Length: 261
Image (cartoon, rainbow, N blue to C red; front, side, top):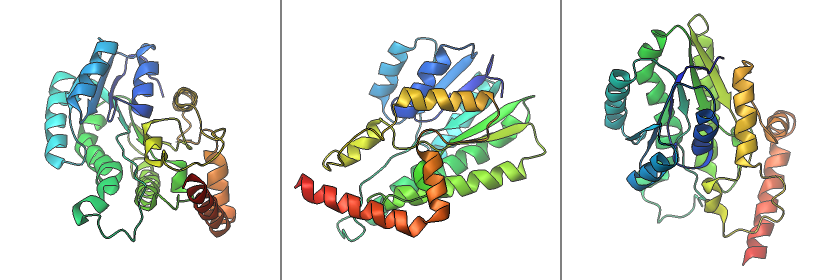
């Protein structure tokens, strides 16, 4: 996929993986970069760091926000040809916790999965008008083996993986390339959800700049499924012995919880 002279929209572009995509792409010959986020302060901070970008406050969990985003972006940036669906949240959830309200138990699905599906659905007609276009969906290595303390997040990312596979199949005869980036455990603010659990060595956590560098290289080489770092192993383990590794992760986390108390 050629990124030169592209106009790229990144959801969730003010921190973590989205911000690192912005940082690395801004150093290339990309024509325009638009980022979205829910926090005005963070959008303003990012704009101060990267003067040439365009920022739009938008929440992918709100269909009306996506409609407004579509209208604004396609009018101001008609050459838009690449969307990076990165916006996401991750929670440490105990499914037996009855204090969690019904409207919040699916927050990760609303943003990580439904937000991506709605973004694709709304922007697809516009992308079809471009001579060359791409949709890049950020899933996770947890799409292959769920993390016991993040059940809804894992389910949402598994949904992204399945959805992206079928999207690629249905759009095979179009001008749009469909990429999936499945990061492993990565050094981003999402890790804050587990700050109270001592998981021991951080050697397995991939640096976000390395993860995004590998992802961009994969996109440039038309590698439609990009599995940086440990994600290749997670996919293999999910095929060979999913129950064994899930139980192993559960025991490791329970041990870490006891150690952290």
